[in-house]
Image 1 (cartoon, helix red, strand yellow):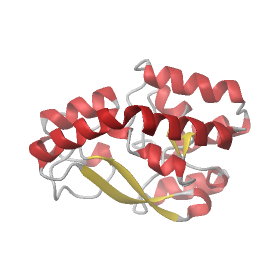
Image 2 (cartoon, one colour):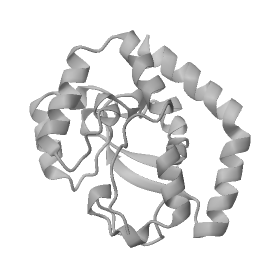
Image 3 (cartoon, helix red, strand yellow):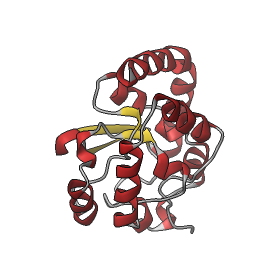
Image 4 (spheres, helix red, strand yellow):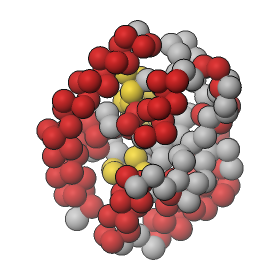
Length: 184
Protein backbone atom coordinates (compact mmCIF):
# COMPACT_ATOMS: atom_id res chain seq x y z
CA UNK A 1 0.00 0.00 0.00
CA UNK A 2 2.90 2.36 0.78
CA UNK A 3 4.29 2.03 -2.75
CA UNK A 4 0.86 2.78 -4.23
CA UNK A 5 0.63 5.94 -2.07
CA UNK A 6 4.17 6.91 -3.11
CA UNK A 7 3.32 6.55 -6.80
CA UNK A 8 0.04 8.43 -6.48
CA UNK A 9 1.33 11.32 -4.35
CA UNK A 10 4.62 11.79 -6.22
CA UNK A 11 2.89 11.82 -9.63
CA UNK A 12 0.13 14.10 -8.33
CA UNK A 13 2.70 16.36 -6.64
CA UNK A 14 4.84 16.68 -9.76
CA UNK A 15 1.78 17.45 -11.91
CA UNK A 16 0.33 19.93 -9.43
CA UNK A 17 3.58 21.63 -8.42
CA UNK A 18 5.32 21.92 -11.79
CA UNK A 19 4.78 25.73 -11.93
CA UNK A 20 6.38 26.12 -8.48
CA UNK A 21 9.21 23.76 -9.47
CA UNK A 22 9.82 25.86 -12.57
CA UNK A 23 9.91 29.11 -10.56
CA UNK A 24 12.29 27.62 -7.96
CA UNK A 25 14.48 26.28 -10.77
CA UNK A 26 14.61 29.74 -12.40
CA UNK A 27 15.42 31.58 -9.18
CA UNK A 28 18.05 28.97 -8.34
CA UNK A 29 19.57 29.39 -11.78
CA UNK A 30 19.97 33.15 -11.29
CA UNK A 31 21.05 32.92 -7.63
CA UNK A 32 23.46 29.97 -7.80
CA UNK A 33 24.04 29.33 -11.50
CA UNK A 34 23.11 25.67 -11.17
CA UNK A 35 19.65 25.13 -9.66
CA UNK A 36 19.66 21.33 -9.33
CA UNK A 37 21.93 19.29 -7.12
CA UNK A 38 22.59 15.63 -7.86
CA UNK A 39 24.41 13.38 -5.44
CA UNK A 40 25.06 9.66 -5.21
CA UNK A 41 23.39 8.26 -2.09
CA UNK A 42 23.00 4.89 -0.37
CA UNK A 43 19.62 3.41 -1.21
CA UNK A 44 17.66 0.26 -0.54
CA UNK A 45 19.90 -2.81 -0.10
CA UNK A 46 22.84 -0.35 -0.12
CA UNK A 47 22.43 0.20 -3.85
CA UNK A 48 23.60 3.56 -5.18
CA UNK A 49 21.13 6.00 -6.68
CA UNK A 50 21.32 9.67 -7.67
CA UNK A 51 19.29 11.91 -5.39
CA UNK A 52 17.97 15.14 -6.95
CA UNK A 53 17.33 18.30 -4.92
CA UNK A 54 17.29 22.02 -5.43
CA UNK A 55 20.77 23.37 -4.77
CA UNK A 56 21.11 25.07 -1.39
CA UNK A 57 24.90 25.40 -1.24
CA UNK A 58 27.44 27.14 -3.44
CA UNK A 59 28.67 25.13 -6.42
CA UNK A 60 31.85 23.28 -5.46
CA UNK A 61 30.96 22.78 -1.78
CA UNK A 62 32.47 19.58 -0.37
CA UNK A 63 30.24 16.50 -0.57
CA UNK A 64 29.84 15.84 3.15
CA UNK A 65 26.94 15.55 5.58
CA UNK A 66 25.14 18.86 6.20
CA UNK A 67 26.35 19.21 9.78
CA UNK A 68 29.96 19.22 8.50
CA UNK A 69 29.49 21.94 5.87
CA UNK A 70 30.93 25.44 6.33
CA UNK A 71 27.91 27.69 7.05
CA UNK A 72 29.30 30.32 4.66
CA UNK A 73 28.67 27.91 1.76
CA UNK A 74 24.89 28.28 2.24
CA UNK A 75 23.57 31.55 0.82
CA UNK A 76 20.29 33.17 1.92
CA UNK A 77 18.39 31.50 -0.94
CA UNK A 78 19.66 28.10 0.22
CA UNK A 79 18.67 28.79 3.81
CA UNK A 80 15.18 29.74 2.64
CA UNK A 81 14.86 26.52 0.62
CA UNK A 82 16.07 24.43 3.57
CA UNK A 83 13.84 26.17 6.12
CA UNK A 84 10.73 25.72 3.95
CA UNK A 85 11.84 22.23 2.80
CA UNK A 86 11.24 23.30 -0.81
CA UNK A 87 14.71 21.97 -1.68
CA UNK A 88 13.26 18.46 -1.25
CA UNK A 89 10.56 18.75 -3.95
CA UNK A 90 12.66 17.34 -6.84
CA UNK A 91 12.96 14.12 -4.83
CA UNK A 92 9.38 13.41 -5.89
CA UNK A 93 11.07 12.25 -9.11
CA UNK A 94 13.19 9.78 -7.07
CA UNK A 95 10.00 8.55 -5.40
CA UNK A 96 8.22 8.12 -8.73
CA UNK A 97 11.20 6.12 -10.06
CA UNK A 98 11.06 3.78 -7.05
CA UNK A 99 14.46 4.81 -5.65
CA UNK A 100 12.87 6.46 -2.63
CA UNK A 101 9.64 6.62 -0.65
CA UNK A 102 7.93 9.69 0.74
CA UNK A 103 8.52 8.18 4.20
CA UNK A 104 11.59 6.21 5.23
CA UNK A 105 15.12 6.65 6.55
CA UNK A 106 16.91 9.64 4.95
CA UNK A 107 19.47 8.38 2.42
CA UNK A 108 23.04 8.87 3.54
CA UNK A 109 26.27 9.45 1.66
CA UNK A 110 28.67 6.60 0.97
CA UNK A 111 31.35 8.36 3.05
CA UNK A 112 29.17 8.20 6.18
CA UNK A 113 30.67 4.84 7.11
CA UNK A 114 29.63 4.80 10.77
CA UNK A 115 25.99 5.47 9.86
CA UNK A 116 26.10 2.78 7.16
CA UNK A 117 27.49 0.25 9.68
CA UNK A 118 24.86 1.17 12.29
CA UNK A 119 22.00 0.95 9.78
CA UNK A 120 23.30 -2.31 8.34
CA UNK A 121 23.38 -3.89 11.84
CA UNK A 122 19.74 -2.93 12.34
CA UNK A 123 18.39 -3.96 8.92
CA UNK A 124 17.47 -0.41 7.92
CA UNK A 125 18.64 -0.91 4.32
CA UNK A 126 15.77 -3.33 3.69
CA UNK A 127 13.53 -0.28 3.21
CA UNK A 128 13.54 2.41 0.57
CA UNK A 129 15.05 5.65 1.84
CA UNK A 130 12.58 8.47 2.33
CA UNK A 131 12.14 12.19 2.03
CA UNK A 132 10.97 12.31 5.65
CA UNK A 133 10.51 9.97 8.57
CA UNK A 134 10.44 9.64 12.34
CA UNK A 135 14.02 10.90 12.79
CA UNK A 136 13.33 14.04 10.78
CA UNK A 137 10.16 15.01 12.64
CA UNK A 138 11.94 14.24 15.93
CA UNK A 139 14.86 16.53 14.99
CA UNK A 140 17.46 13.75 14.88
CA UNK A 141 20.07 14.30 12.19
CA UNK A 142 23.06 12.49 10.76
CA UNK A 143 25.46 13.94 13.34
CA UNK A 144 24.39 11.16 15.75
CA UNK A 145 24.74 7.98 13.65
CA UNK A 146 23.83 5.40 16.30
CA UNK A 147 20.76 7.31 17.51
CA UNK A 148 19.66 7.94 13.92
CA UNK A 149 20.01 4.25 13.00
CA UNK A 150 18.12 3.19 16.16
CA UNK A 151 15.31 5.65 15.38
CA UNK A 152 15.13 4.50 11.74
CA UNK A 153 14.97 0.85 12.81
CA UNK A 154 12.26 1.57 15.41
CA UNK A 155 10.22 3.41 12.78
CA UNK A 156 10.43 0.48 10.37
CA UNK A 157 9.54 -2.17 12.96
CA UNK A 158 6.41 -0.33 14.10
CA UNK A 159 5.47 1.26 10.76
CA UNK A 160 1.77 1.56 9.88
CA UNK A 161 0.03 3.40 7.05
CA UNK A 162 -1.22 5.94 9.60
CA UNK A 163 2.43 6.74 10.41
CA UNK A 164 3.08 7.37 6.71
CA UNK A 165 0.49 10.14 6.66
CA UNK A 166 1.43 11.45 10.13
CA UNK A 167 5.13 11.94 9.22
CA UNK A 168 4.18 13.66 5.95
CA UNK A 169 1.74 16.01 7.70
CA UNK A 170 4.20 16.80 10.49
CA UNK A 171 6.89 17.59 7.90
CA UNK A 172 4.57 19.83 5.86
CA UNK A 173 3.55 21.58 9.09
CA UNK A 174 7.20 22.42 9.76
CA UNK A 175 7.98 19.89 12.48
CA UNK A 176 11.61 18.84 12.65
CA UNK A 177 14.59 20.52 11.13
CA UNK A 178 16.11 17.73 9.08
CA UNK A 179 19.85 17.76 8.71
CA UNK A 180 21.19 20.87 10.33
CA UNK A 181 23.86 22.93 8.65
CA UNK A 182 26.03 25.30 10.69
CA UNK A 183 25.13 28.98 10.71
CA UNK A 184 27.40 31.60 9.26
